[in-house]
Image (cartoon, rainbow, N blue to C red; front, side, top):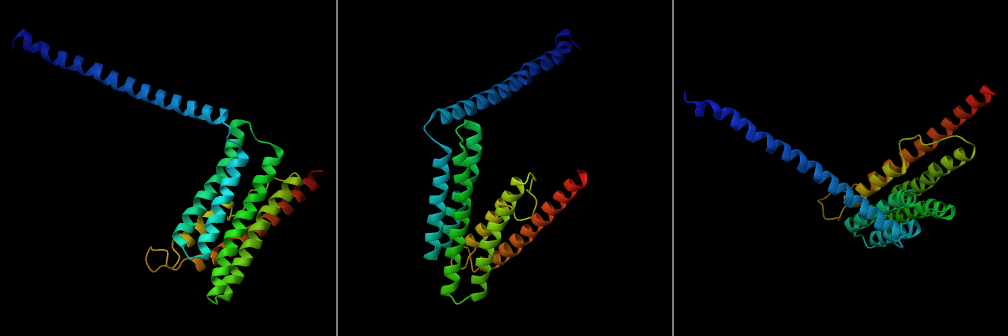
Length: 230
């Protein structure tokens, strides 16, 4: 074998090394660019006039639109509006913490609007059930509203007593998912002959009620342990 042939393999190996190094550098540069872009967008948002209260009110508008669409039996569109409005509900708190623009009144407004939004959509759903003579579903809708309010109330009262209370299966996010599925797959929503709105409301009412009792027992246990510790 000639000397030139003997030297070929090392040259091939050497030629691969720069490509591997360049690939790693490109990935690192891409990640750095993405991070810089995210930081720039974050800074632009913080410097803008956008406020957490504006996001909260946008979420309210989305849920009011969802309720209006339910009364017109446009369930798929109602589900989309409900999901978008609920997403805004989750973003206002995060944006408040990220931007430092949060205020005590803003936190109060956020919590209040969350309760209003959930209630107004379920009220529209109850009106739809009533128009169809579905009395049991109407009762379940009312129970779902009451139990959802109690889930939030028990947490607020517990935290006022110094007890953290985030336990339970039907948190706000879970309730949003259940109701969204019910709306999107309601009969006449355009996704086949599914009728999941009434079952979703039944599940929502049951799980919310269970969660209310979970939080009551959790607070009772926590306060008993604290009392024994004294």
